[in-house]
Length: 442
View 1 (cartoon, rainbow, N blue to C red):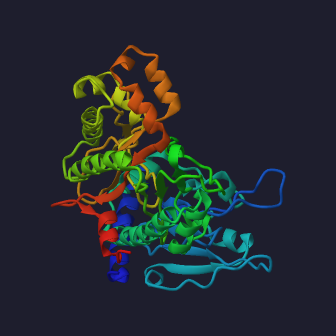
View 2 (view 1 turned 180 degrees about the horizontal axis):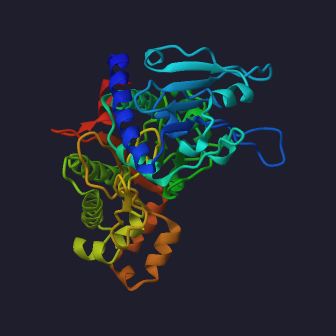
View 3 (view 1 turned 135 degrees about the vertical axis):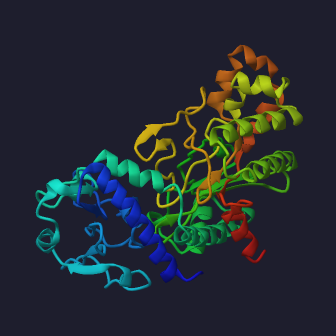
């Protein structure tokens, strides 16, 4: 990896400039960002697994110090109130170390009382970012909208430091995807494939950026399939796996679809989607309106379905009548960073506002125009969803569908192919494909 110390120094300087403007917009003097705390389970003495707030990870590569805070006042060095509780029930975070500590003032605190003594006494002049349970006495998150809008808008552009963390998250994710593919080829269950992914990533489930989707055969038709069958099916026809990794709080989001050697007809559809996805990812360039790219994805899906005899209508008709939305019901992609679905995908300016999705495409998560530094996913798909197909069959447009072929392909579930792509001043940088290419082939 590159020299993270110098990259981090420049990253911190950049976000301090953004914070200066964000504080001025809210007429505040100090920015306070909570790392978050574990959420308690209802009627239980257990907590849900802790996940640090993304806005905290944006400042610091600290993911395992719940109860900590970041304080920033313009013109001063950021302070980190680093929680190391007196606790014999749980492992206490180790003293912070690494490339980032010299760039901030670290203040160890060991209790809520210690923390309260270090927080600003006048909360009225603070932009306090967090959730209600992060409150420390009268120091309660107020989340001023001008501050949140300004910070979120600029998070769309990843600094070289963030880009390097995300390259590593993709390296980890692609290594784990190879292990999952091998488990599929070995005939393992969805649960077994998931376990192979975790072992290769060397991550626990709470450390993943999102719950993995491991869908065999017809399960691939469910976009966010959340089960993990413990028993392998009698026949492995297909695998759709959407699973990512994290590094220092930053995410990768990767999807691959595989066909068994006996499913050559489905492999032909995968190959067609690979060609489509290649066209789309090459258009992650400055000035590209992402809404237009999403609509282009629908046109390509229509052409693929026509070419492979699923549809008997023109591509323009298939898109205009939303027939393609039956087979491709989600958005082409989204921003990605400290959130897997990163913030401000619709935001019109640092002050706020919203850029709406194209009519009839409510699930698109990104409507902004791309520019250098943005990292987006490109994830077109084709699915054979029983619910959506039944709805289409009942419409007049259903007469243009080759139902015999569609019904035959239900056994394969669906296809999604997803990469994480950096918009640059030149050709796009595909973080995912580069990471796969760097892995030894087995």
